[in-house]
Length: 215
Ligand code: NAD
Image 1 (cartoon, rainbow, N blue to C red):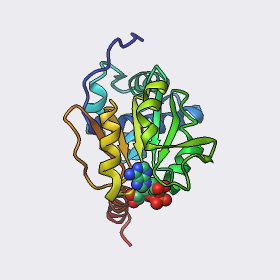
Image 2 (image 1 turned 45 degrees about the vertical axis):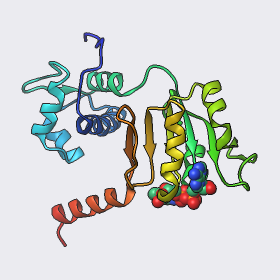
Image 3 (image 1 turned 30 degrees about the vertical axis):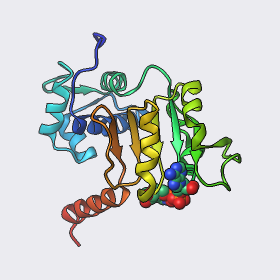
C-alpha cells in the first residue's frame, strides 16, 4: 500500500470517529478477523455506513466493492494519521483526583504520549512526589516548559480556576490543550483547546441507548 506523505485535512468530527474505528479495528485484528464491510463496522461502532464510507474516502481507495476493507490496511492508514511519530511531552496542570489518575495511567498504550511534569497551586502538594512526579509550583512553569520542551498541556483544574491556569500555559507557548473542566475558556485563535465533558458524553450515550433499546 502506498505510504501517505502528508496528513490529509480532515474535520474534527472525522478525526474523532477515526479513533473509534481504529479501536474497533484493533479488536477485530486481535480476533484474527481480516476484512470487514462498512455495514459491519457500522454495527460495531454505531456510526452510519454512509458516514463510514465518506470518512474512508478521504484516504483514497481503501476498499473494494463486494470485498470490504482489509482490517490490517485500515489499521496502518489510521494509525499513521492519528499516531504522532515523535514523542509529545505533556504537562499536567492540577494534581487532584483526575490528575492523579492520568499520572498513574500516563498513556501507557502509546509510547509517544508522555506526561513529563505536573503542576498544582496547593502548598500541600507542591514539592511532593505524587505518583512518581514531583509537583511543581506554577511559578516554576516557564522554566520547566523550556527545559522539558512542553508541547501539549492537560488541565484538570476545576472550572472556576481553569482560566488562570490556562492563561499561564498559553503564555508559555503551548498551543494544544486538553481541558477536563467543561466550561469554555478564552484562548487566542492559534490555540487548540478540547474539552472532555464526561457528563454530556454520558448523557448522550444514555439518550442513544434508550433510543435503540427502549424499555
Ligand atoms: P480536585 O479538586 O481533586 O483536583 C483539582 C486540582 O487542581 C487540585 O489539586 C487543586 O489544588 C488544583 N488547582 C486548583 N486551581 C489551580 C490552579 N490555578 N493551578 C494549578 N492547580 C490548581 O478535582 P478533580 O476531581 O480532579 O476534578 C478536576 C476537574 O475535572 C473538575 O472540573 C471536574 O469537574 C472534572 N472532572 C472530574 C472527574 C473525576 O472523576 N474526578 C470526572 C470528570 C470531570
